[in-house]
Image (tube, rainbow, N blue to C red; front, side, top):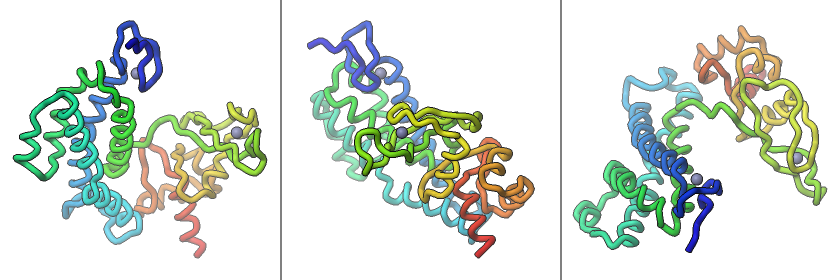
Amino acid sequence: MSVLNCVICHHPQAIERMACTSCEITMSRQLTDIVEFYCLAEGELSPGSGTGARGTERGLGVRMSALDFLAGYDAVAILASWEGEWREHYGLSIAPMIARPSPSLNRSVAFLRAWLPRACDNHPAIDDFAHELRDCWSEGRSAARCSPPRNQSITCPADHPDDQARMCGYRIPIDADHTHGIVTCKRCRTDWDVMHLMHVVISTPGAEFWADPEAAAGYSGVHQGQLKKWARRGLLDVSHGRYNLQQIRMATAGETA
Ligand SMILES: [Zn+2]
Ligand SMILES: [Zn+2]
């Protein structure tokens, strides 16, 4: 068997391994982050901490997402099932899991980090593991209200080049600090004014984009001073000095209702 490309990022590698060193480092960091996110989400729920905006819709929303993360907490079950799978694959004892039947996040993370180099060498499903880990990690990140990614993408709303009945749907990357100018969709070759794409995002429920105050004011037509007021009242989250365009839309709807 010769595996020359990393099965996760598909970059060529000098040695025969399933996953490359850089993917291994990423996964190791994500595992550690998840434990941290879990603690932060717990803090979000403990009395006297968190948003300080209890009772407002935003306060409630944050608490709901922290609650979902901790209660359902898929990550605990998902990581525990990977621990079981790796133990079986490498012929290890499953005694610790039987001794403590309730899944423990810390134990699974410690195990998976210890066995990660070996799994990156030769575990046949390391790419599935990488994808599920990434999902747990991003769910945890939003529950813990950590900062959004610097670079984000927007779904291309043009017609699909091969099928006019469908939307193109290509994820066009947008640098959050350069939200002016023209971007070209790599699939349908449509040139988009970034400003126009933003308006599509603002009116799409569930989509999310963060913009600096000046850009946010430009996209939403809401004065920067008003945005500041809303942020003080707890209607808008501020992250790295940027506002969430979806929340601006909801706050605007609330004002005019
Ligand atoms: Zn890789
Ligand atoms: Zn497109």
